[in-house]
Length: 147
Image (cartoon, rainbow, N blue to C red; front, side, top):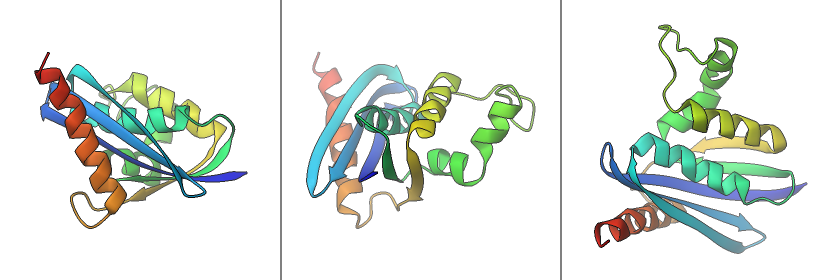
């Protein structure tokens, strides 16, 4: 199984507001950048979308390490929130509807196709690829302001 690293980040101007996302896939030293934007979104949606777009770009099942500065995304997997939400009909432990269900369901499906590990990185710190993702995600939403 191919080993792939995916660095992800989402950014938003206003929350909700214009948002951008970026995923950098690294396989055997080769980088592929996937980025985009949405006019009306939230930071959490952009964080999720960056991971989804990164995983969607894989053409076959892979062994994937996803690096994210989003506690929201990483904790959903490391703390077992996603499984509990799914079992509880997409309700939180407080019986409220989970936000961003559409993206969580898509991400859950994608993680079934690949062997995925989520690794929390510190945002805006010394991680070269996280910083690059952040810069590109911000550039993406800034493009929307020019239109």
